[in-house]
Each structure stands twice: as structure tokens, then as C-alpha cells.
Image 1 (cartoon, rainbow, N blue to C red):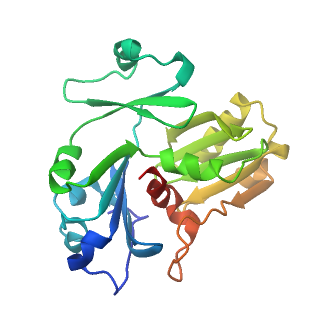
Image 2: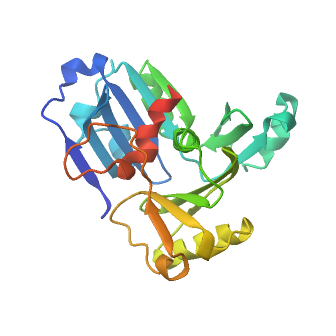
Length: 265
């Protein structure tokens, strides 16, 4: 458990009704998040827990061990990936693309549609997935931030917005022009200074002026943004509400990238 771990569950949750629920799982490098959703209501949410709990549930046995969930959407958040414009993507070149991922013998490679214009190729260590695949027959495996990107596109993003999703040790950036993805990348960071550095690095690469750029942030509400405000005067919380029925104390932006996995179903 990390210092940013969170847990919520509703008294309305029942393992016996799992066949009516959707289970969302977002796997990161060292931890995972999960949510159980019924229609548009959040029944359970856990964030920032070690992968060992996902493989052999102990604290979350009631939420993670039912095998008959109606849908299980598993979002993988790889450290290394390649996004290729569809006009340039060809299956026959996949072997060359895979070499760029520096795969090992045990890694599993995925090639998936990211959006209408792009293909994403990424790898997974295959340490957790075999257990989940065996446990959940109704599973679907997707690129971890596919839903987040799709949710943003639906809002018709403007060119002055830089979208950021902040987790305990990872930060994800996305930039759009004419509602088309022009940039997506992620970084591992250690402290607020790193967060500011990677934000500045991204805006510099995109040739965006800090004073004119609006940072639209989602993710862990407890993460300190440090001195970001010293360089970026326009910082807003992402207003997207993927789930309409949230309990008091939980905001939509906190679990946006997780809840947006529903768009991948």
C-alpha cells in the first residue's frame, strides 16, 4: 500500500450480483486501481495498491475474486509504447516495431487501435495478466489510457489545452488539434519538481507558451503540483464526469482515466 492508496465501497455492493456489474482494472508499473460499476453508479474503488493484491486478493477478496462479472476491462499502462499513424502502419512491419520495445522472452506484445487515426503497439511483462485472464472469462485488454483520450476527444478540446493525468508515480500528457491526437506521452516522476520539469519539457516540445497554455488536470487529488503555478498561470481541473453518481468526497477527476475504460467496451 502506498501513501496515496484509497478505498471506497458502497453497502449496495454484493458479490452475488457480480454478473450485473462491470469491473475496471488499470494496471501500472508497480500498482493498480480498480472500480466496480453498476449502470452509472460507483460501487467500489481502490487506487494505488500493490500488484500482489491483484494476483492474490486478500484485502479486496470480495471485489476481485468473483469470476462472473458482466464485463471486466483491463487497462495496461506500459512504460514503453509506440503510436503509429494508421496510414503508416502495416502488419508486415510489426516485427521491426516490436524491436523498438526492447522485449524479453516473457513479454507479450499488443497491437491495438488507439483511435480513428492511430495504432498503438506496446508490451506487457505478462506477470499479472495470465492470472486475470484465467479468473475473468469476460475480460477485455486495452491500452490503459485509450478511454481517457477518447473521453477528452468527446469534449472537442481546444489547442490551448494540455491535458495531464497525475498518478502517484506516473504523469500522462495529451495534446489535441482539431479534436485529433497530436501528442501523448507518459513519464515516471519522483517529486513535484519532476512534475514541473516534465510539464515544461512537454510544452517546449509542442512549442506552447506557458502563459497561454491551460493545464487541464485529472488524477490523484492528493498529489502536490509544486511550483507548476509559478510557470503556468492557467490550471484547471478536468470537468469530464464519466460517472454521474459518485459518493461524497470522491470527485470525477480522481478516477477519470480508470472510469473512462468503460468507453472501450
